[in-house]
Image 1: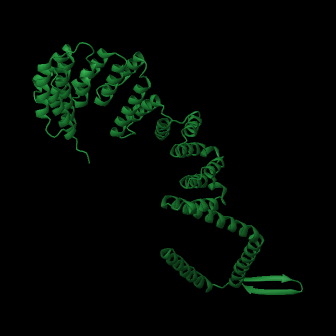
Image 2 (image 1 turned 180 degrees about the vertical axis):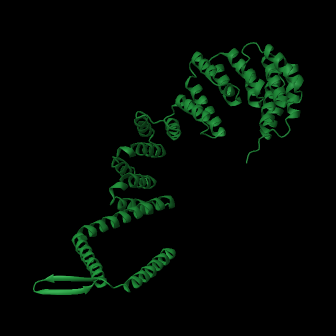
Image 3 (image 1 turned 60 degrees about the vertical axis):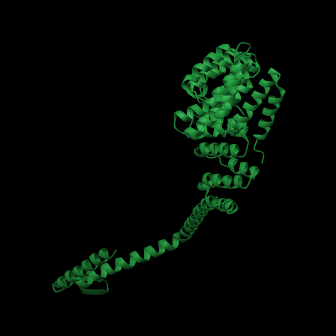
Length: 397
C-alpha cells in the first residue's frame, strides 16, 4: 500500500507539472454566444471548467445512486452480519464439543442454524453433543433434521457410530445397511459394524469383519488376534451339542487359530464331552507341535478314551527332547494311572513334583494325583499325606 501511494503521488506531481507547462501556451479563446449574452473565456479556463463540471456531476450521480441503494445495502450488511455470527457460532460449537462442554456446544450449534448453509454441520455437532449427554431422543431429532442429500452419508455414519456407542446395535446396523445400499462401503463403517456385531454376539460376522479389517490394516494385530479367538471360542461353544458341526467349524478356521492353545483346549474339551476322543487327541497333538503349552498337556490325558497306551508312547517320545518338563511328566503320570501302570505312574508323578518348584497349581495337582494313586494301591496313610500336602500347598490370602 505504501508503494502504491508513492506511485500515485509521483503521478500527481507529473500531472501538475504538465498542466503548469501547458498553461503558458494560452493562445486560444472560447466564445459562447446566447443572445443577448456573449461570454469570452480562455481555452485553458474552459478545459478546467469542463473537467470540474464532470467531476461534480459524477460525484452527484454517485451520491444519488448510493442513497437509492442504501436500503438494499443495509439489508445485505445485516445478512452478512447474521452469516458471520452463524459461522462464529458453528466454530464455537465445534470447539466446545471437543473441549467437553457439550451443553454449550449444542446451544452454539442451535445459534449456527441462523445460516441455512450450516444446517448439516451444526446438526451433526449438536447430535454428537446430545449423545455425549446421553440425550438419545434429542440426538435423534438433530440427526433427523439433516435432510440435505450431500449430508446423508455423514448423517448415517454418525448415527451408526453413536448408536453402537449407546449399545443400540440394531439401530447401528440399520443405519449402515441404509448407507451401504447407496454404494458406500468404508473402513470406518466396517469398524462400527464390528462393534455392533460383537454386541449382538453374531460371532460369525465378527470373524469375517476381523479378517477383512486385518487385511486392510485397519485393526491392531493384537486386537485382531483377541477378537478372532473370542469369536472362534463362542462359535465352538454354540456347536457343543453337535460333533460334526463343531469339527466342520474347526477345520474352517485359519491355521493360526487351530494352533492356539486356548482354542485347541476348548475344542478338545467339547469333543471329549461328545465322546469323540480320537478327534480331540488329534487337535491337541497338532496344536502341541506348533505351541508347546502346559494347558494342552493337562488336557492330553483326557483324550485317551479306553486305551491310553498309544498316548503314553507318544508322550514318552516327546519326553526324550524335554526330559525336565514337569507338565509333560505330570501328563505321563496321569496316562499311566489310566492304564493302571502304577509303578510308572508313581515315578512320573514324583519326578513332576520334584521339578514343579514354585508352580503352585502343578504341585497341588500332582499331590492329588499321587493321593489317588495310593488310594488305588490301598495305601491310605500315604494318600492322606498327599491330600494334606495338596491342601498346604494352597496359598490362601
